[in-house]
Length: 223
Image (tube, rainbow, N blue to C red; front, side, top):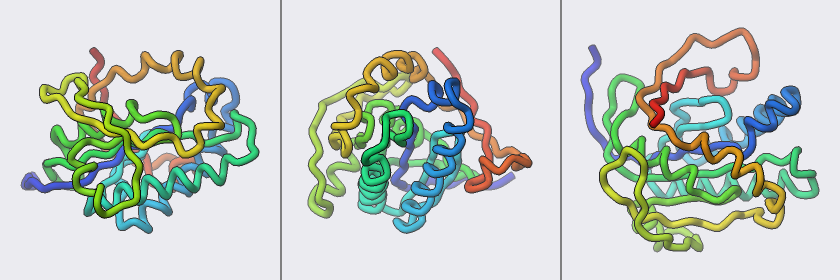
């Protein structure tokens, strides 16, 4: 059995806004957008000395050596998507949220566990579409070393997390394109009520959609 150790890590979670709706409406288009999304995020994460730990459908879970690298990567991703989305109808855009937390994590084999992971996962749905949500730990460590314009939201309660966290939001990078997503956001709101129990690796399937990062099973606990 592998030995468990602890470390401080900058954790990023991302998720595509409206992807479930798009998959229901047009699977072919949804898979094409997912492939492009994976290419953009994978390249940005690697260039920022990050590591993709898991890919879960349209969501990505990544680790970085520092908060600065994680935030710079998130900004790069959103700026790249802003350029990609320019001039496209809403259904052809790739719109994502990003959440970043700096915290203590447990390293067990090739996996990371602990509250630091759960906090990052909870921050991501709080980010505006096209924007970024940071914990105070991240904001304090990067505010003098990166060019960010973050708004302090205040203390929030994160479901199944005992401690309250002060969060900051970086406004959407392509907000002018998102006026049509309001109804979609309301429809998907019920999907945010989950807690990560664990992540298990699965053998890669024959389909090519998951070939960029491999496939994983994310175990959820609802309620």
